[in-house]
Length: 613
Image (cartoon, rainbow, N blue to C red):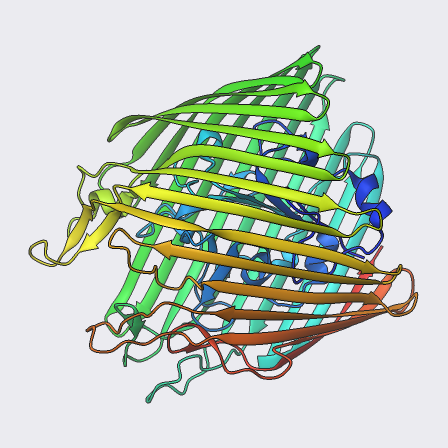
């Protein structure tokens, strides 16, 4: 059964969980991205959610965005079904405040209006793990990481000598077919892994308005590669690469709602690589990395074809000194260059950073992170984060963190000839969270986390700027605050119950509720091993109290209604290496939207087979 872990909770909602408490203790989960250095979750003061490969396979939803959004404090919006634009929010903050990494490669789109990641550009079948770090992480990751960071793992070469592979096929609603093949091999000195997958779907008509009657089809292919070689006992060289290409149909928009234009179509590609060298010299570890990410998008509608291309290049050094006694000092430097075909200039950012993790006592850990970025357009910005973890008793853990952060203006906001302003300054933020977790002897747990983020100097679109409007700095402070409550209850050895509730109050500088941020988000789940070969699960998600939104001409108020969605799954182990499964999304065929006028999928059934070798 699958396992999910949280920095403030050993559960993640709405996904299957192990009901064996001893499994959780034996795994001693590690956070790779919650600090500069890898740490056990028990030592990090950050709020971290980890989803493992088995949990992703058993997820009761087809899209990766919806699976990630099943975690506490995470929500998502999508303009229809698979292949349509999808964005994730962390604690009420939009996607542009949460960069996404795949195998350590920053895959946010530098050519977009804001530098952010569109989740329709990645297939869930090619991802083997996810780590969600909430709260400002600019002290670790620089610009954009105001709300947190989401790190995904694709193909990953085994560390120990082994040979393993898997293949899966799936078919279902909307004439959808998917297939994935992955393989990994490791010897004493080297490792290699790859994954290749694809999907195609006829889709459905997502816009419930007069004049819209065409289905929005979608197809994509995706590949990832990871390899390393231990040149000596102390030197490792590695390379990882990712590729994605997709195309499909979409319903054009005018402003923030659908227009009555004919359907459009798009094509997108993404490719990236990251090469690295790691050298171990006694108590010191030195790492050097070089990475590149490139994205291209063609969008065609009644007005013609628009082309967008962007690129990000990075070189960085990281040093780690294991001082002893649980104290680790990390330090480094990096340079990032971003460019977009539509922008006349590129942007260079030079960063210096350091982090001290200090074990004051066996039960008390402190972490202090500092980063200074020099941006070629606006100069220097220094971000800091302080975090503490106190294991008050063997079964009670208290965590707290406070940090400042920033979001640099995107290339579009700076240099677009019509709407840009090269004099824009970065947005600045302050965030904190405080959490407590209680774990019981039978493996049950309950946790609660308070959070708040304030953002100043927002970059907004001002329609009063002549002649067509433009981007400008806004006065005032926007806030997002709330609480996450989560619980896990095992019933015997075969049944696990999960529950989580998130309350979010997100407001702009005028104290108006932020669009597309639900105030209440409740998730319940049950996961059961019915027999040694049969397992199943049900999840329920209730999302309520969306703020009002407006038509493009502001002629009417149109709010997304509250909705409740139930998903179900069942699997049968045909042999030890072959599993057949059935997944039914939106079991009761609820009629709901996450964006006004864009229908979410109705009842959808999918059948698949997975085999390992």
